[in-house]
Image (cartoon, rainbow, N blue to C red; front, top):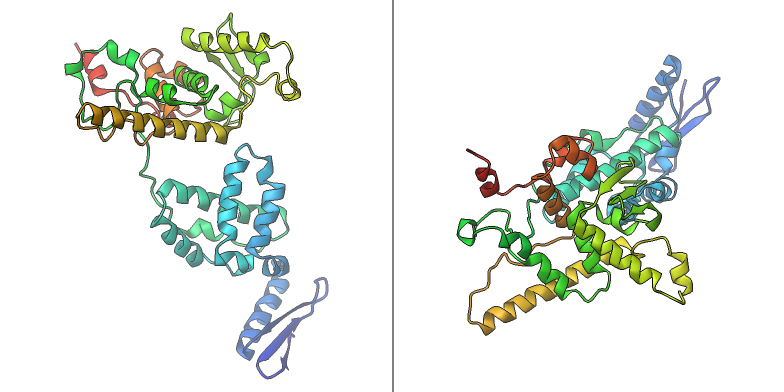
Length: 376
């Protein structure tokens, strides 16, 4: 029989002792709550289904997030992005509560607050991290009784898939201007790529941009590229570790080869390399991914300003879509769409690294006029 005793004026302590199980005790504000809890624990022990809840009841979400970041997140390739999500969770009031007290209603409330400020895909990524924290705690940290509140929460439908195309002056020269649709939903504009490259103050960004748009490689794959995996004669770059965990060989166009050849010649011409150069000798670029993103954003901003100055000087109305809403990842979109006009789908998946053709379709955005030309 469980023991119920009064402690102080407003507390009731319930104790359960049973052979073969550790003693359990918990304090409540009412006698009815204490009796209900004790009867539940005793019933579970009698049926052999009892599991300890003590760790889940004493571990706060903040503590679980810290342990998750140290033991799980740091081993992931996207640890930097996940660390940002963990930092966001640690700042909310929910982080102060024990894991066992967090319910799906709490998560749903947080979801609704975030949806007012962020796009559905961002909120989905945050929910995915929290879900993984609960699953790891339940499966690996001895909290078998813990339920995952994220599993019961309705997930927002992502509706922010990007279809942004980046125009190139070279590409535009091969098409009649009167055949192009200025109001295309993709917002492709002629010469954007060259303008961004010209406006860049970075010595490495132009080469990185050309390599991205010619090969469809991800930002992380480009900054991790090593010279020992680059075969300029065969025109192939080997990626031993990619986002999805599979190695792949990326064929390179003549322009991509020329870009890398120029970098290699410059590298080989160094007579007295510094210590940093020696440490990063095998990296093609030796720059962090976030630095690439910031350099690209600054170049786009400068290119847009130069374009506006030109329009005002010529007394022309600026195009509101030209050199706006551009992200570095759009280069992969653009490259995939260009390569799709050359390679069939099964070959394209090998180049871009997509395991599922349905995921590849998110990056393939052909121009309607290009498809129309293929019709007889």
